Length: 91
Image (cartoon, rainbow, N blue to C red; front, side):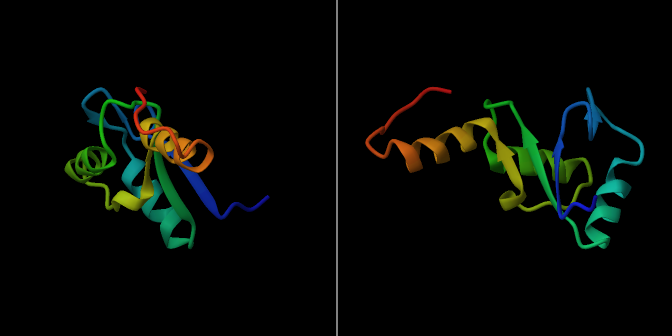
């Protein structure tokens, strides 16, 4: 089967602790070189998409904020779409 989009968790997939996993940057580059869409996902809601993007940049990954999905951001999008009257939520 061929896939057009890859969702990559970060902690434990792209890095472990403070170290980038060997070959991770190259694997992302190969996927993109093959025309695949790559999204970076995390279940950590403590950081914003901008903060996660900055962390990826520091580790040498070329990524835009639009390619980052955090659990907090996903929850906010879900609530906005399905419960538009909710104005405050804690994740």
